[in-house]
Image (cartoon, rainbow, N blue to C red; front, side, top):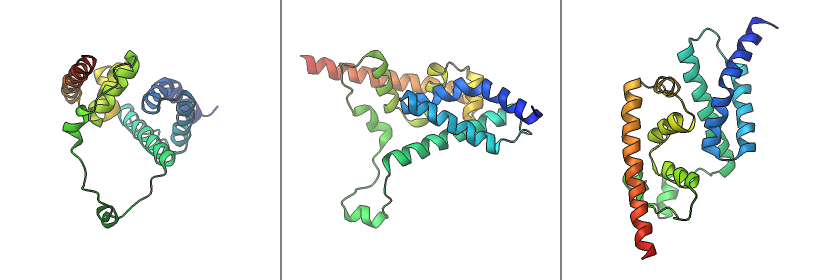
Length: 183
């Protein structure tokens, strides 16, 4: 076995579980997550640069995962592209302010705890959702999360604090909404 093959095998073994868990948290289907995990490592095998340092390699792998997931969703939904004029002619009023309105959408109260957490995560902005996913679903340390997302450790701590606060607000709104619905 060549040195590059040994290095890639070590890289694969070190990152397999992390890649699978991250993709599964985004896709939610075991079989699809397994397929996408293999796609990520096939892309990595073709394009890996063994000269990169560990931090740079983790950041690069995270980007490969994100683009693979984006490609999956693009193919899954086969969204057609429209020009701005076509959208406006059809009555589109422009992008909605998702930051403030995401938490307005009620979550069904009959969800099991895992589904409830997933619904709250979906209501968070992407950067906050990624930090919480890395920290609590993938069990990464603050340092590992910072490396994977290309952030500083301080930034991860701030984002985690804000995300937890935002998630608690979303949860309390859902709780109030469900309490009103049961009365």
